[in-house]
Amino acid sequence: MRRADRLFKIIQILRCRRLSTAAYLAEQLEISTRTVYRDINDLVCSGVPIVGEAGVGYALDKSFELPPLMFSIDEITALQLGARLVQSWADDTMARHAESALQKINQVLPAHLRVQIQRTTLMAVNLAPAPNVLSYFSPLRSAIDCKQILRLDYTDRAGNQTCRVVRPLCMTFFAPFWLLTAWCETRQDFRNFRLDRIDRMDVTDSHFQDEPGKTLADFLETVQPGDEGSDGSGGVVDVICK
Image (cartoon, rainbow, N blue to C red):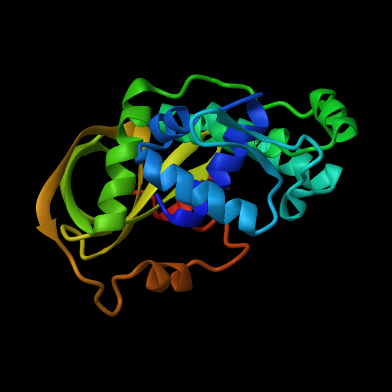
């Protein structure tokens, strides 16, 4: 955890509790009590109104606000809707991160904004994506970040089963489907694979390097805004694996 993130989390914990000991903070942040004492001292020196002492506990003045997080009601509503969409259409890990982000925002909101957020009328319905789709999220994100080659057993839209070796580039949500955009080594071209049509996915130990003509930027240059795919969903969907 970055030091800046750790200091911010200390403030969040102190906002939620009447009194927090150094031992409790150390346990929550998985650091030593000595580091807690140093971080608390740095926060106090920077002007954060923390009261207390080592061996007793620490508390944060309730009047303390974090100006950088003072969003407008429309901004907060947009963030809340985005988080609900993530909770409805992504995996459990992303859903937890979305909920954690909302909690951080709600903790620093003035009371009148907190009430308005609770009255929001924007919802996102969870239509329960196929279990195999959700199970692919975490390994796919990791493979994209680490540039790991994938082997896919895939059923195309004509019902044909095929095996592909691909370079994963990004994941895109085209409601109600998630797509994996990849460079297909088998076809030597870009393809979008619907996650719900992947029958099996193996993350290999082989890594790839970006090559001209095979990157995400190259793919995006081939997609013309306004192009309609054969299913009327847009140019990106028109290159779903065939």
